[in-house]
Length: 213
Image (cartoon, rainbow, N blue to C red):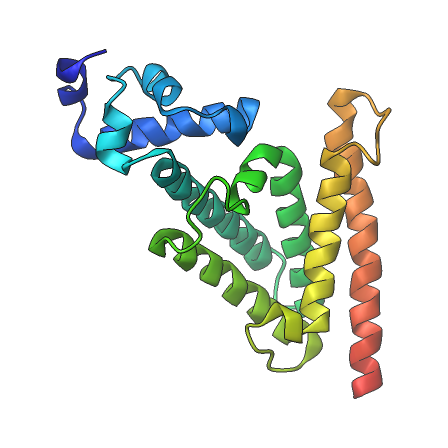
């Protein structure tokens, strides 16, 4: 691992290789275990390469967090499109896609929201967070029949949706529920539970909309 190895990469390929290495470390061990030296080792480059391209540990993890957030947004958008035109169906599809991502990548999710690891003011991460908020507001506006503003604290319905999705995923990831389920069955059991739970949430939103009509 030396400068000649680094130069063997195209500039963009080296950054991608380091991001891939960083992701594998975080996925396997959590962000607390991440080091630039280990990322360089896994990418097969000199230990100084990450600092050259990302500045420091926070710079690399921040870009990884933005990448992860955009990946999650894209997966949710695909699920929403496949659900068809009915807002309630779209809401459930979005909720299921979020939950599946969260329980499949618990360490990555933890990375995205911890100021300890990332620079929340970084433009790439800000853009990803704003994109996620805009998608949520659009979905919830269609469900409630109201034009909502992009402020979670001012929208009880939006806050409820976020709490249900993140709260359920956290209970699964921390083994508060499905504690004794066989490991190879936990994922499918969790998604089955999530589906039933989101049906109840959809019913609640439907009833609330009917009351407003």
